[in-house]
Length: 239
Image 1: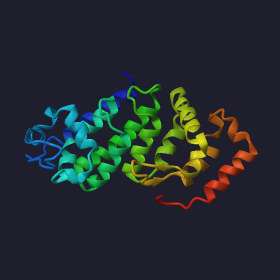
Image 2: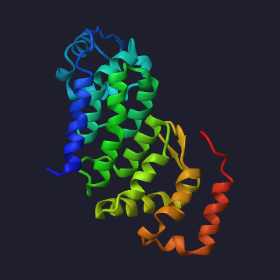
Image 3: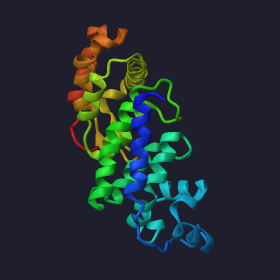
Image 4: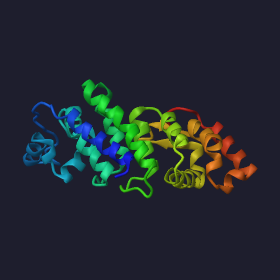
């Protein structure tokens, strides 16, 4: 196995270890949507929770559950492993939004630190693999990590320093995607558009990685002028 993928496997295993000492938990929630058998399942060992119930917890808004932060916390290693392996059939962007609502940075230090170590490991593994083994695109993964951590620049810097054919292939697809209909001039990341990315992303695209992509639109002075004008007209911050 590729060393980068080995590091990702180790980071996922470290998540499991960090969360293994979770205390017993009694799940509850919306009885219109879920029955007692579902709550019993969620109250049991996390590794026995079915993929359907895992997807439900990953996607449902927090007011569907009693003690949502605790429920989400105990299932986070399963949820993230399912995202990485392509077995979680929900929009990856929603994961970051739910992690924020569950206040993951306030979790016990061993758990929060395992997550902080996981983000760059997953990002590097993504950049070193093309096409993706999982259905999540590089844009979705970048969005998830950015919203979850509240910062974009470190992930762009890692991309800039990753000189591989796979990273450049991801880059070409990403740039083509965000230039479509000039979306980059007002680009928000996250399920609820929590993070406005244009102010950081556009300069990076035009300087840091410009020589790594064959993109005729960026050689057109009129188009560049349009991008910069539109970007400057967009207020920074949350849309």
